[in-house]
Amino acid sequence: MRAIMVMYDSLNRNMLEPYGCDWIYTPNFKRLAEKCVQFENNYAGSLPCMPARRELHTGRMNFFHRGWGPMEPFDDSMPEILKNNGIYTHLVSDHQHYWEDGGATYHGRYSSWEISRGQEADPWKPDLGAECSMSSVFQAKKESLKRPVYRQRIQQDAVNRRFMDTEEKTSQAVTFASGLDFIERNHSQDNWFLQIETFDPHEPFYTLQADKDLYPHHFAGDADLEADWPPYAPVQEDEDTVRHVRYNYAALVSKCDRYLGKVLDAMDRHDMWKDTMLIVNTDHGFLLGEHGWWGKSAMPVYEELAHTPLFIYDPNQPQYAGQKRSALTQTIDLAPTLLEFFGISIPENMTGKPLQKVIEADMAIRSFAVFGYFGSQVNCTDGRYLYMHSASNPEVKLYEYTLMPAHMRGMFTPEELHDAQLAAPFSFTKGCPVLRVRAKDRRVDTTAFGSALYDLAQNPSENVLDTHAERVRQLSEGIVKVMEAHDAPKEAFCRLGFSREGESR
Image 1: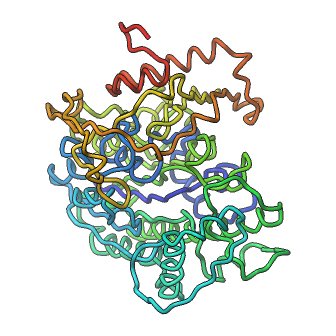
Image 2 (image 1 turned 180 degrees about the horizontal axis):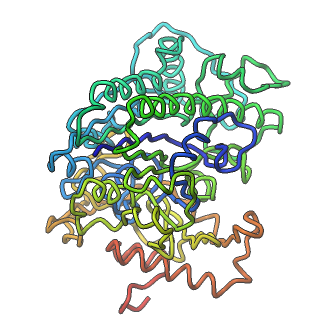
């Protein structure tokens, strides 16, 4: 048996034809949907990038105990479990966060791995004398561009693009070429897992002219202004500009679709559908003006961010190709799904569930999907309603629990660690005590937006919190149950205004 995962970053399900989009060109996603089971109610868990990937490895939620960070010594890693049980695992990726301090323990879990450089502001090519424009259509970037560190990132990205000026040099193209090369050399071999992971369509939405030409781009503004790297900020631009930015995103989604087609072609060419699982997924979505926002992180976790596309083809159940499933599923379910496919026992610390029964009979595996950022609102959906719960006691101090003290691009500073304490083990740390470190005040925190409840079937933009007290109670109980199942720290309950079973508030 073999398995292939094609993973994207920031792929908005509403921009794909199988999920109802009627203006973005994605013929290979339509072709994929005809081959796979399409999941209609798949949700993220921990946001953003590396927290989601920790869930992909461990099959359990990350955001109750820490923010962005490496794999931990006590973590169960799905690719490593496969590797240790005779399944060859290979990662090809251009996701530059894997090579930073906060992600540097992930790729080592695979049997082998390859990288391609140049995405975003990846510190790749040095050209100290290069000049680039610091002008942008985004009003919020004008202040950011005054900061030297931010300007340096814009400069680095501009330099990187000069080394990706033809299709075959772009990082997504290099990544898929590596993945397709693995397939060509190993399609006749057994017992392997290949993860082809591209950073696209994450911002910046860099594409060449052929992809841009798929969309009209009738833009009344200055065409030389940068319009493919939205800030995480409120929309201050006019509708014409918003449309122009969406076309840039659409061009990159169409490029993603084109390279997905190459994987489908390879599976057709080598008759791999008879024994190869295919999973196509993403970590979270992206806001392109919806709710008056660009990006993620700075705003509540709306549907467009949390409700994600997922397609799975199981060669043991080919009769369900082209069907849809409505059961609530999440990122944490992918690790146990792959382990079960290869006949390997699922570790007891994995809280996700294998999806084979969902594929077969749309069996419910959870009543609630819970998701969010560390130290921020906690969100819960039952598939009909989306509840965003803000902290009742925001003054309560939060702590990160880790044995790998690193943030996204740097280790914890000595100042952060001055008051660190050794805390007792959690249920999932395999007897290991962990460092208890006061969380940084500058973390993502959307508490100030207040709690909200949305009826996704009736009006997904109207807050109906005040008229649905019983539904709020049920969803709040769902959050508590999930927190208890993940042995969330006591202060997290206190901050949210919840109590653990058997404890007073």
